[in-house]
Amino acid sequence: MSNWLLAIGTAVWFGAVALRAGRNCFAWTIGGALFGLVASTLVLGVFHATYLPISHEAYVRFRVESLAASCFVILALGWLLTASLHRQPQAIWQWILRLFGRPA
Image (spheres, rainbow, N blue to C red):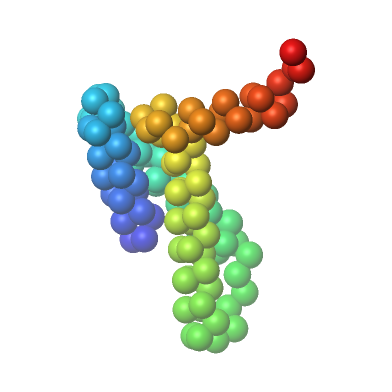
């Protein structure tokens, strides 16, 4: 259930950013939903594969930690995937190119 909620949230986020940038809102919304679903399924699947049930309290803490990790991965990678839609990365890329570029 949480996978679908994260997918819907990611779809809304991608669609809103695309709408603000004047790009194809529908395509970015579908792409955001698919990205959110795949990323959350992978992260939560890895967390569930490593979990050994001990108690109910441990399970609740595990769920909170796995959802937080999934949200972090979606936010970090989603920000990179939508870099072409917002203007902040331009200054960051210019700084990185100056930092690692060839000296003139």
